[in-house]
Length: 102
Image (cartoon, rainbow, N blue to C red):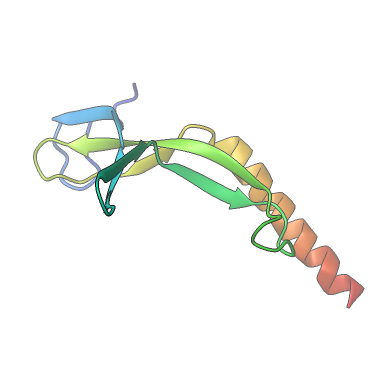
């Protein structure tokens, strides 16, 4: 862990909780019971700007947080940033290719 990661970027505190797991919980009341769904959040990058909502292809990466124990600052980090950036570049290239074709 680098010295920068040991300190909060907002307040400089060394009381940082690394790699905190983020949970999303949805409670939906049904007619007779309650449905509870728990899932780990991900960041998704669409690789095809022209796909419809049902045919989009996404590159996914789990995310985690670093939490400052003093001020509560909580940046999020992707587990696979290089893969996400490659997907973003593919998205941009597809957009540029279409603009050239017009």
